[in-house]
Image (cartoon, rainbow, N blue to C red):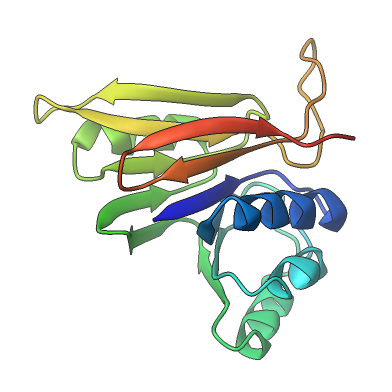
Amino acid sequence: MKICIVSDSHDRAGPLAAAVAEAQAAGAQAVIHCGDLIGANTLRESIKLGMPLHVVHGNNLGDPMAMHKLMAKSGGLLTYHGQDAELELGGRRIFATHYPHYGRALACTGDYDLVCCGHSHVAEIAWQPNIKGGQTLLVNPGSVSGIGTPGVEEAFTWILGDLTSMAFEIHTLEH
């Protein structure tokens, strides 16, 4: 099973929908959004693409009531998990949060096959040693909105992951 991982869309519906559409064309069957979505309306175009969306909030929360209302109207396509999410997709245990330090800590437990985070606006894919003697994949898709961090070139990034092979790659939208 392939998935699309995005984060930090910051009310920019166009780039978010473009990343979801590219991932869908590449075979993705679900989307994980790692927070800082802000407005629920940012998801409307992505929902129309018909893939399940799993969303957590970040430090830019927006309107949680609007998110719940959109979720109720999405026909089951949108799941708003709140602060973090424990998921099982493609037979893999997945944890999603906004904060990298929280993500790294959860990866260290060895309880998950994949931990997804955001916040830094810098895309990264890394294997994190865990306390069970193995390694957990820790991914941060950067910012799908193109908003960079100081000193970092702006890039509209997202991640396409294959849960069967555990192969993940950073993609950049043309802007």
